[in-house]
Image (cartoon, rainbow, N blue to C red):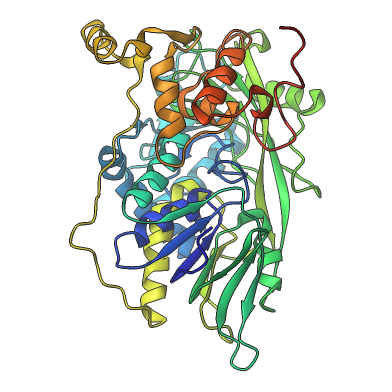
Length: 483
């Protein structure tokens, strides 16, 4: 374990990962710490993978500025980091005249937030753009700058690029507190379940656990609570799947239940938005899923649970009292910086990272840019996306690419081996699933699951009984049953 750095970033979700990449530009010693067995935190790896434009954020807020700036930057970021990205646009739909009035207010706010090309759609135009839309829809509003992204590939890209530039990643390491000098109360170290790390600055990007970390320095004027979101994941290439993100009028606490096409061709239906108490409760339930289906059928009636591949529940942090994003240095505790209370973290991550770098500069940290900073990164070669000529060439180079492990998603052994050893690495079945989609198809790992366990055990040089689905305690195999 590394026990000293200039900066410790707590949390490898979207915000922490983006900050790590941004700070890797400078001649600094940075450690990124994550309590889970893989990057992605709790919320970032379990969301709708949309990149919001900031059109609906509070007027004149930090959230608006950073989300809008990030949205403008993402196309170039994804190009450099080899991440799949598509600007689909989003359509709000209205079912009656009252909702049309609300759409006019949303458009006005969007324009004030800089989304000047927001466009009112007639009933005819809505149905022309999305033929599967409910015939009862009477109009809509197009927000062209909304986009979708391969979210796990994006998080991996942030972290891999940061590591290529010298950032240290520590997984399965729980930060238990921040230690300060008893006299002048400046940060001196971070305590973890693996020992202390001396540092000058700590960046709290711990999302749902940010308040617990803030309490350890004696400056916490908020608390976090979990807001769960349940989703359906529907099959690929459905005849009724929309080309745009399709949304109802927003609720007081969320954008509502959306229809979101994914980069890989699946359709995401949801999420719900339920305030809870257990920060790690990710159960789905029939009542909530049925209500999601009922609401989303008001937009596209053809949606069917028979097309569902799986369902899942993500936990995102909500904060009380609700204010603007809290990205700040704390007066009275030199070296402690917060990046908390951030909804739509993926959408705003690049902007937040730049903002945090400026705070560090203002706090007196010497920010000397590296002359040899690596700005680009290449993703794992995906067999499913190769041409026949490319497949032939890669198999000649490495015959393991000709061994298909996941039939549903056409994932080869060669790809799995690369994922295990690339960047942060992959040590669990779910880590392989997030990187390559092995197990995300119709059979949900029924065919490929045992073979993925075998490959992980072989490449990590451990017994198959040690391979987990995700965290420790979720071992896939109990014991050897027969020889």
